Length: 236
Image 1 (cartoon, helix red, strand yellow):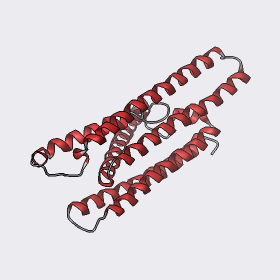
Image 2 (cartoon, rainbow, N blue to C red):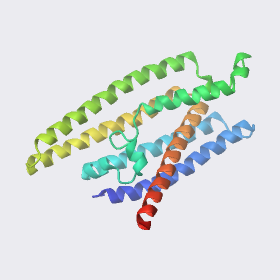
Image 3 (cartoon, rainbow, N blue to C red):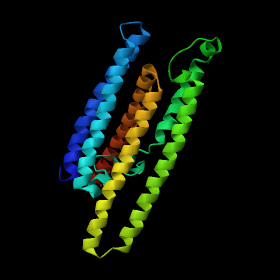
Image 4 (cartoon, one colour):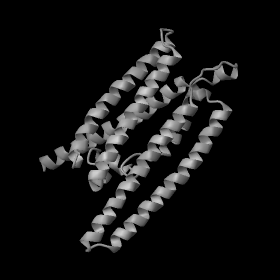
């Protein structure tokens, strides 16, 4: 795993398996809505499987960063669109909360009549006051950590700029990027883990599906844009 190329291959395989896992989540959700066999334990098991899949991704990415931090930071496995949205070689952790609030609002509005009649839907549109409070607290903590890591990256960039031309010291500074990448990825994973923990299994499934669909959508759009640019260059 000495280069970004190998991680790119890993990512392609990992991403395909993520699609498979999300399909399982969606099928389970559909079965539950149709009153077919789908227990809370089934949902909890699938959520655990998906979270383990994300954990595996960050573990392998950490190893890749140790070997080639500059390649990992540049994220060659991502599309141009994805990279334009990146925060330290990945999605911004606080995106999690925008997604939670957005999904909750959409589902709440679609179920508002039932909710006003006292019917509990049990989905993301039915978050309890205590859940909203915990989400808000977690968001504040995440913003604070995210800003601290951003400041650390800014300081690292300033220090490296001062050392341009001194190859030995520059090499040592580049190694400091590994720590920053790991901190960013750790925050990403911990944020999702903590959000999933405060949700019910049903809500966690809905959240993970929404998060993955956003990821699939952005990547698909990015691939199309990159393909169009490549075709335009070839045609000129």
